[in-house]
Length: 255
Image (cartoon, rainbow, N blue to C red; front, side):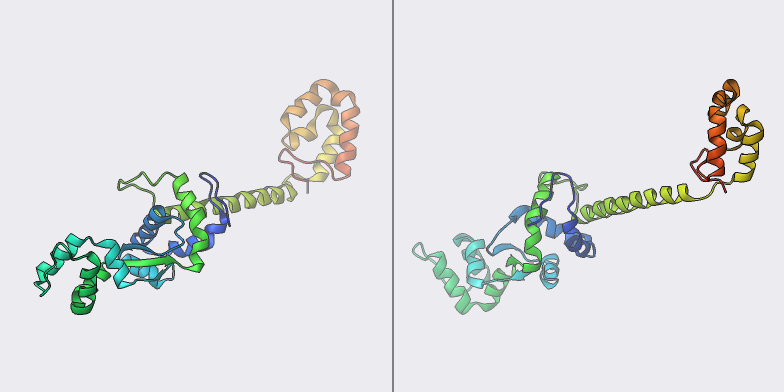
């Protein structure tokens, strides 16, 4: 099972969240709220049936396991069932001895439209196999970001998680590309010519002329006041330039 550390996004979630990113924002928000509320349920749980939930079922995030009897039993009290029957003026007169189970049995047997309406207000679902593996790390991720206690309009949505992960992924890619570019840039030739630098070094290396030519002003000044580092640095630079080991101020080889 993949693990998600606090405020860090796991690359393991990218494939699933890339699918979520294609969802309408309200559908992604619904998925987030369900995961926050129910977490790792290994059994069917009831949620209100709406178009967002229907979309999540259609896309395979959840599997519809609705059972009319259980759905009505879990989501309606005896009093609520009595009110529903009274509104419809069905020929059923519950008394104090009538149990909720009796009322449900009667509704399922004699009042099909009412049974459909009561059952269809809720849907009993389980996580699909393709999504269940991601619920635990996703639940932990949501808790780490403390969205459970955020109810204002500016709450964080799942698509925002995905966007931030994508930004981190792109940033990592950019960082790698930057390193590659730096390496490539260092491997490129300088605009300064090797022949010119060698001539300047031979004729005036003790004055640091080749350093001034390649932009190394600081060491050029040092050569100027120390007569080419007492002649030693002058000789060494002649050898380095002739051997192609000398670079300009940007670290580029002379052309």
